[in-house]
Length: 260
Image (tube, rainbow, N blue to C red; front, top):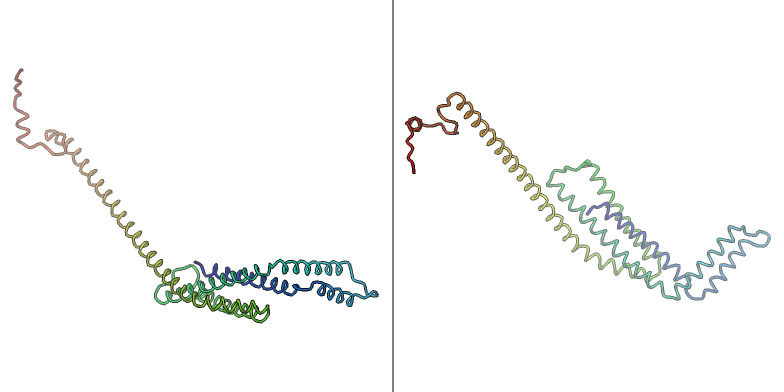
């Protein structure tokens, strides 16, 4: 799990919540008597563009598009689509908090480990520290902005949804933080053990190759010694072990052949 990835996921969830809140608010605002809303739009348009100051083609196009948007929103409200958006906002809030607490847990574990272990990464210690500080501040600001949007700038029911999800995720997030840190510690321990085991296997392999090379060198040396002895002292035989004096005496005796 990478903090930058989790941060990007949390940020994406917040953007989805903002878009959902806007759509939910628009649908709720367009619900009810759509004729009154359209009449209000007509009144505003004619007030801005009296006969002596006619609207341009682009202004007319935007006006018609806005009327169509209101009709579509009213249709969605009558079909109950705002309920589905409400559920989707809740899901995105849960996704935001899930990645939010994971990101915090990982950063806390990295900070704890930095106090007891030598850092060997590519980035400098200063850069890593700066990244953590900036990310923490961005997460805090993200949380403030989300609360402001849900509680004060959206329909009341969305504020209630935010409060419920926040209360639930605070409890679950605290538990998850502990579990995530434990998992990271266990993964780190396994990683260290695996690295040590690999290092041990390399050492054993080097010793094994060294032993084979040494044995081959000794064998080759013995073969050269035996070959030199056979060439200089042929009477000692051509075997690896030279013949003893008794063996040579017995070989020198006349052979007696006994028929069948």
